[in-house]
Image (tube, rainbow, N blue to C red; front, side, top):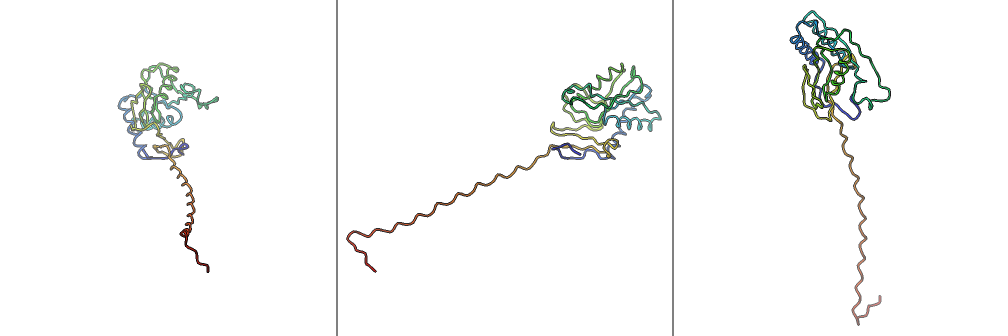
Amino acid sequence: MPPASYRERQELMDADRLSRTLARMAHEILERHPELRGTVLVGVRTRGVPLARRLAALIRDASGVEPPVGALDITLYRDDLTTVGPQPVLRGTDIPTSIDGRTVVLVDDVLYTGRTARAALDELIDFGRPARIELAVLVDRGHRELPIHADYAGRTLTTTREEIVQVQLAEEDGIDRVVLLERGTEPAAAKPRPAAKPKPAAKKAARPKAAAGVRRRRR
């Protein structure tokens, strides 16, 4: 469901297009890292994790080798943690193998300001010293606030800051699609028309006075 006060403006990807986009991204990763032995995919919770698992499965189908997949919970590394709440919900980080000297492909659903990616980089460095870290995102919507770019992007589009790109995945939402949301605008309420002012009563015409010296006839 769209967030409160937002409405769907456009469907960017349906299930079929999303599947084709991930297949292309998997082949791009495979072309850059054909051996895969030193490659690890790490998804940023929440929707980056199922995306990383799907990419790993597609790479396996194309090459016969499935890279390990990890999950990263960046909650405690966010620079806006104080605004999240007094007790943020943690879903846990799981890195199944050492990342020292390996290529880590960080996977997320949407790249926006870059602050989520920065938090993920900070956490990854706490787990080891990878040889290289790359970023794969399903949608790059622009408006970067940090010098971060995507090495693999399923789709790049121009948005306004008032819009939201919402990724829905079967694993989390029961459906595969990507939609662009915009803030809903309620039609302005019609201003009440002022009540009509009552028209002033017509003045009674004064009876003309009889001329001097003229008597009125009695009936």
